[in-house]
Image (spheres, rainbow over the protein chains, first blue to last red):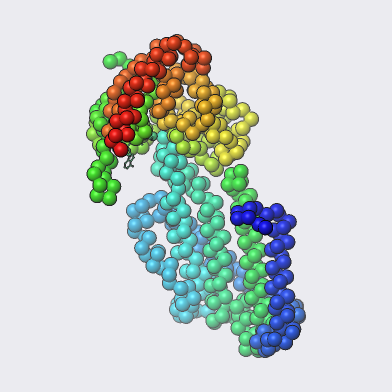
Length: 258
Length: 263
Ligand SMILES: Nc1ncnc2c1ncn2[C@@H]1O[C@H](COP(=O)(O)OP(=O)(O)OP(=O)(O)O)[C@@H](O)[C@H]1O
Ligand SMILES: [Mg+2]
């Protein structure tokens, strides 16, 4: 019997993780191939794979994937470049926080997807509009979370820095930022995950390329296999980016694990 | 009146009441003169304002009244001229041991090669050779506090402030650390202000022991310790040491009872 908080070994962990995927696909195959669910509504895994192969080889789906990835990464990087410094300043300087925090907290709850029609009016249906959806969806979240992280920096570390001769700027640059860098990286990883949901919404409306556009096209053809393939691809890309982010964080911040 | 390096003039501290409660008088007006090369230990029961006094000297807290002069100049805020070692472990976790010790030097803009030499010498003095590239997490509590002492000393402060730096260590380690600190002081003749609630520690290290009263804190006794240097841990069993200990125990006991009644 497993006991609370008892760690499991690396190989057990991987085996268990994979076995749920197998279980999931088995249940899906059973429901569809066994004839319990109409194929009009839910394609079986085999059809899904065939449709997916067709998409990749015949319909240039790789291009759609590339476009979507670029939109997410582009909008996200834009948001991060602006939000991280603002968040750090808000965490460090309380007056700046008092100035911006109420607005950012409010803006955070504006749903990015609701901006899509408005953004089409403002920016047309080009790439700019897609990037802006991601940007709006991410920027306020990052600002707020980074500000909280920086604001919670251990006071005694800051005091130690002052007694060692740091000035205010030195404290921000050489204490607040390095102390919170791993947490900021973790915040970015989290928000990048959310950015994926916004891009699809942006692509469902007024778009001629991207994974979301393919899904909408497939809906018209009742090609559920293709739609599911698209959704699964998003999941896989998310998994990969998450993994890369984690690996990067581990190598950037060895002191965290030391 | 000659070479007082630190002069505490009627310093008091009142903390505002919490949630409409009565304000807390943590420190009654307190005066103290610290001479060059003094090793002063401040002894007092828990909550008597020892940390408060030390933080005011460090510039991390402002006095409600009075002032502190360092080399004749009033203290307005924290600075590199007063090195501080805290009771909690305050090494920067993202820096290695060597980088931690070098922190103050870097802030001062000391060139790299010089920095390396100073760091090497202090790593040696606190017995951490071979751990330069470890992160604080990889070190024991005693080693972390030794690093913290080295980090403060590397900055060459005019005065070293220590707030129960060995409070969280076991007895053996604590004894070793006391000898290490005393050895450094005997060699380098630093001026030290050391807060503790351990009577033996207070006597063993000090050239002067300041006893504080229970809250609100006030200086009750100022006892100079004439034991010869260099001191060795065996000194703790000599009659002179024991009689000092008996005297201080009596002073402190009274205060602890008062503090208990007040609570
Ligand atoms: N920031 C604060 N706000 C309100 N009251 C405080 C604050 N800091 C300290 N005090 C009060 O001041 C008094 C003295 O605190 P201080 O930390 O100086 O005691 P101490 O002598 O260092 O005790 P210990 O030996 O337990 O560390 C305490 O009664 C405490 O409640
Ligand atoms: Mg204290």
